[in-house]
Image (cartoon, rainbow, N blue to C red):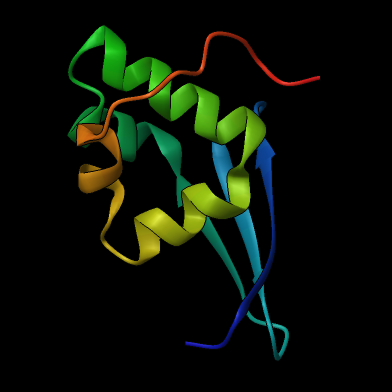
Length: 82
């Protein structure tokens, strides 16, 4: 797959829309990711933080199969970024 250029989280439809080099677009359904990996309040909070603050990294982790590893790491996100 081509290089991931940008991502945008759409709260209205609960998905991350990714754009790749070469014009390819992809939508990631966040409900499916939450159902698979957000099975504790802490994991759900980490997924939410990532979606709102770092949608590009969210997409990279999901597409690269690393979201489970990310969720297993400790985190110090106490609030949303401005």
